[in-house]
Image 1: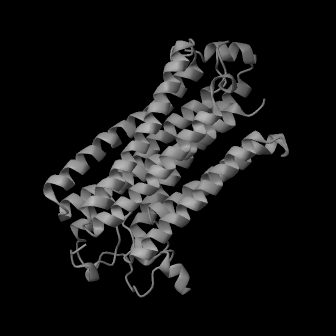
Image 2: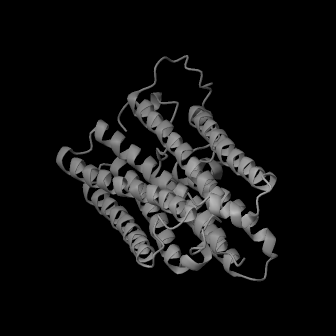
Length: 213
Length: 128
């Protein structure tokens, strides 16, 4: 193990633990985020079903608009940047929250939320434009599966923004108590996971979908 | 983290490392790698330099690489012994996701190919 790898957290030295639970139950600060990690993974299983549906129906356009006539890659690039930087800034918020720095935690969380709102605004604009052009979810099986997949991700982002606002208020009102920090860590897991799902969406739906046929 | 930090041998997913410089470094490296991979994805999709039929496969590979970057640098899923449980849960999740997606795409592609229906008619049937 090199020192450098340990510094950025790629390896962990010094632990003889086998992870077999011989030390008895783990502390709450481990169990709660671990349970939430399981929820996030099962959410990804849910999304995998939606991706499979989309992949199956992507060419079932019923004579309506196809994917390479609908999507604007420039908008998708801005959405992607907004969500990626939002995910990064959320990590900074966790770092400052760990050190109980109220001002910077709130600033980073606010930036996280604003970037998330930019993402959501662009997505809603795109949906509105498509529906206005007659390319709504009723038009074809392709569009039904598109709105279900991307809309489900958008609904998660909306829920995440509500959660984020709640966490900002709780940190403000209750301070950096252990249970508040646990909730904040769970929020960050959720937010990073949404960005991972977005990577799959922009690749499969928007980039592969707009390749020249 | 005042909760007996020295006794914690497991780590929670997403929990940053202990030193502020290494914490921030991990996020910055992750952001840089993710930006590079995203940029390459958009370039690969727009350029005509590359061999057309290979582009989709290349994009999928780039996406999987970027998901790995997010997992390691943002969610701090590592190969360390304190991460065993997180990695096992992830491995199970990846298995199910793989089975659902590849299984569905495989079966549906074969059904379409073996039903002897013309593509236009299949398109019609699948609109509902």
